[in-house]
Each structure stands twice: as structure tokens, then as C-alpha cells.
Image (cartoon, rainbow, N blue to C red):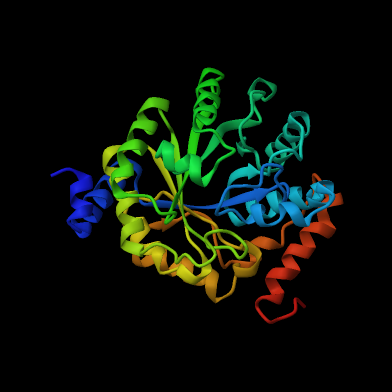
Length: 336
């Protein structure tokens, strides 16, 4: 019986046992904390049916106002380093930044964190503009069924994403894709996902569960069942033992974390970091990792990590302090 049959027969715990065994054998017990850093909150395409930015396109008259202050971006990178987190990728909507600007931001973050960054900046044919500051390119596939993809993301051609990732590989970059669970896909669509991973020789896959945003077509769609989500992750781990798997969940579904780790996740993402760090939500994430018998890299609760001297870029101190104050505010205490 293959993995898809096991899902259809709801033999989920058999899948989880096998995926957990494979994960520990191939990857060990370490679990990373991942932070996507957004460069803007606007997208000129703005028609992916699930996306928050699709609800903002007609509300923002001047897209330039949706650009984040670059010092805030760098401050976030500095604090991510202090906490021991990874930067999942830099992300921004279409039509906001030039390749030259993105490269400059990426290089600065590389200097701050000592690690090259992943990019998730949409479909581009300018990958040759980037260098050692970039480790890999992420294609926002969302769903691997070509016909369903055209419905959900009408302006993001799956073929164009594939061509971009082929170019990324030719330039020596690693390749990743994102997949959203709960859009209305079918279990059989896993065959399309398997084929895509094999065709493009994908190094990393990032799974998210649907987060229904107001003013999108998925506004009233519930998030996917936890064991269904985990079973999809487990099948990829079993089929591709060496692939890096990152899984995202939300503050109202933190109990998903343990089962996603058993399914084969190497890292956790999609948290509102500065609203959770150090309080009961951040500690809950750590508890989920503990009870899954995995070892967390970095911290979601150590407040001492926040207070480190910033020697290289003192101009970032006011921006760094704002994020630190946010963490303390969410502890309902004031720093003395």
C-alpha cells in the first residue's frame, strides 16, 4: 500500500511512525525556529485568492507607503540572530523593490547574521543579479495541481515558477517551494507534488496551513484538520527522506506542532514573533517540541538573549529597542 492509499484509508499513525523514524535517522532531533521577514505589504498582482495582500491592493493608493523602513528590517534580522532563529526567507509583493534594492538588503542581512538568505520575491528572470548573499530561491507554488493552481493563483504561472527554479539551480542556488494545505486540494494532488519535487530537485519545502483572512474568498473556510495536515507532511518525508521540511502553524493551532514534528518537520514557522516571545505562547511552542522528543535550536522564551550589545550598527538601536519593548509589553511587565 503506498502513502496516498494510507491517507485515504486513514492509516495516519502508521505514516507518522514511519516519518518520525526516517526524520531521526536522516536529520537527527534538531528543530529550528524560522522567521519570514517581509519587505512590504502590497502586491501589484494581488489576486491570489487566499492572500492577505489581495485584500490590500485596492486599499493602498501609494504602494511606496507599503514598503517597510529598511532599518526595521535590519533590526528584525539582528534580533532573529540573537534569539537563535533562522530567517526563513525575505519576502515581498510584486512591483515594490528592484533587484538591486533586494540585493543590497540581502547583503546587509548577510553581514548582520553571518548567513546568506533565501528569497521569496515572486517570479523573476533576474536571478543572475544575485550572488553569495543568497543561498536559495523559493517558488510560491501553493498548490501543485496545475489546473487548481491556475484558479487559486491566476497571475502566478506554475510554468514560470518552474522555469525560475530551473534557472536558480543552474546559477548554483538551492531551490524551495511553498505549499498551502486546506485550499481545497485533493489527496491525489500529492502525485503532482511528488512529480514537481522530483522534476526540480527541490531542496526544501515549506508547508503552511490555510489562514483564512477577511475580505478573501477563503474568509469562511476553516483551517485543515491537524492529522490531515500532518499526513501530507509525512508522505513527503517518507518519499523524500533528505528534503528539508519547514511547517507553519498559527497561534490558535499551536497543538499542531507536536504532530507536525512527528510527521517529519525540521523547522517551525509562521509565528507573530514579537507578540509571542517570552510569554505563554512562546513557551507553549517550546513545550510542544519537548513533548515530541525533539531538540529546539534557539529560544522562544529567553529574555536575556534580547539584550546584547549592537556594535556593528548602532543606528539600529532605536528600532531594535522597539521590538524588545513589544516583547516586554506582551509579558505585561515593564523592563527595569
